[in-house]
Image (cartoon, rainbow, N blue to C red; front, side, top):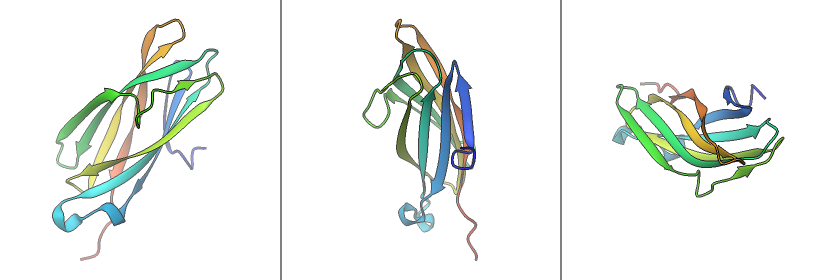
Length: 132
């Protein structure tokens, strides 16, 4: 699992795993645009279902500039993840630099209605080196 999803963090029996890929076909370095896709797997190893309600991302570019993104759910969904189950989705991130990082948290709620945050691990965004 570590080879497929090299970045992971666990909070309250919920593990977030991340893999990331640079997408050269959607990037335009000559115009200051680099693009990555990231695949997230959220695993519920607890004893009760949890629901993902919100997301909070901190995206840092190679110059140290930061953007924060907050919103409801992920890719238009607010999934309920049953015990022993997982939820996968893929999304993307453009940057104005060839390197950067992403990290954040998901706002979750347990079946008693108690809110809690789940850490999204820090992961790098690196484009391959280009020959000049």
